[in-house]
Length: 195
Image 1: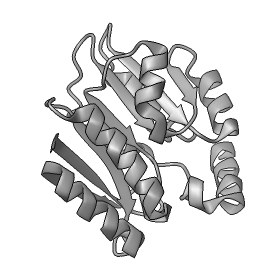
Image 2: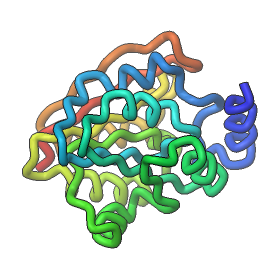
Image 3: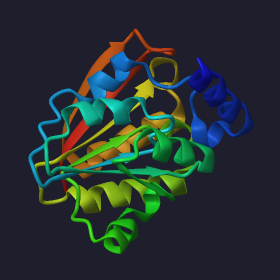
Image 4: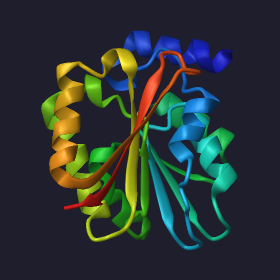
């Protein structure tokens, strides 16, 4: 309940960067993490973990010796995540700086990237910058990228633009859902085969 109220307050103050009125439900988080199939030694990155519902789902399936890195721009969410997940690395910064963050931390390219970022709320330059980092990270690997879009926002121009760009940059696409046990209901979008 406290997470929900805090999340709603952050949304009211900055809807372009938070993009949701409530944290993701455990049902949406489980759909995002389903068939993640991480191997020991691999890295999974989460963009915009927020209050950590998907982070908790990743922690449940993270194999021994696999690594996690969350990248959270909101300072209050970042502080909350570091308290809530003390054994998982969370960086305060932008997903558009992924390759710099990885280099600074001495981390390899990730095999999986999960995202809670509100792409349907982002202006085109921000979408482009984040997509470039995703493609750079996953090109030449058998990894994948997963995000979600709310059903009510699926037809918005920015949401359609994001999906069109992703179709150009990835060979494979899967849409899961809608996940109706989430407020609001959402589709999970999975992309693989970065080009």
